[in-house]
Length: 142
Image (cartoon, rainbow, N blue to C red; front, top):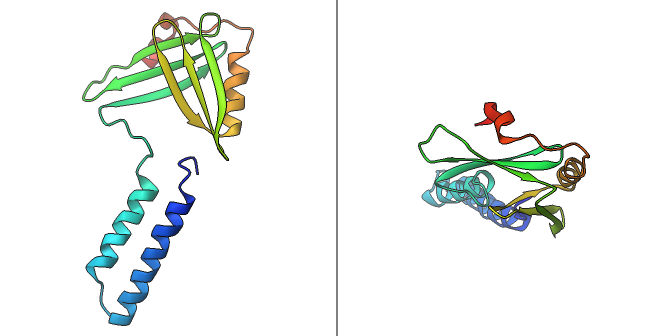
């Protein structure tokens, strides 16, 4: 849903349906059927914006946001804590059911997509009166 690809899914689904009908009429599996099924699965299963060389996660904490990132073939996570007292957060509607937030401080800038409910959770955590945890307190995440 967040990829905004319902039209794309419908178009690929129609092609797959046509190829299934064609294969039934020919009474054999055609290479076109396999091709369109492969493309259809790619549209459904491949992330919209895959980062090939790193994995990253966004975690909300009281009074801030933590991004952790791992490089390709590296077991350690690199943590960055965005503290609301010295960072800027911008939340905006990207598409009909898709929201985005961007957070930045003097060292880094990160962005993430989510639903309206997820953005509400981000804003609630960001506006918490509690201070965010220090990097040393997040040792289990690294």
